[in-house]
Length: 152
Image 1 (cartoon, one colour):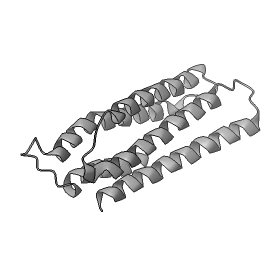
Image 2 (spheres, one colour):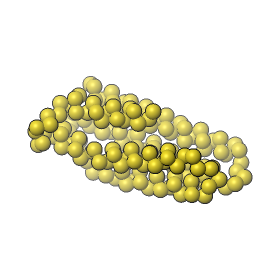
Image 3 (cartoon, helix red, strand yellow):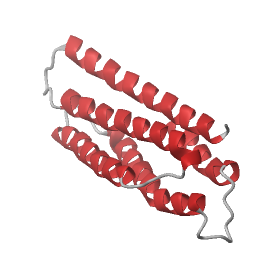
């Protein structure tokens, strides 16, 4: 569900921002082609995370998976921060950056969650699970704001 918003956002970027495919020098086209691999990598991070979701909570590799996803998100954010959007897409760019931050923080929380061991405190498990869920909800809201920014 989360990625439906992002995919729609990316697809509407061309239409709402007036991208002319024939004009590769147009700033919006250059921006779109620059961010496409960054967004694709983000999608892969989430896909890999969700693919591994069937692993038992007690699997020690699950914490490692979350830490790896967090590191990958840090690299994605660094790449994103090196992109300068055209003025008309600056709000979109900021909201997408915010969504990336929420995603990275959620993976950090999940690394803590899975690092608690075999007999963790149930209250701490619940707290961390709720915090990660809240971060992912905030990420979804930021993606919706990014999409709204495209339609202004």
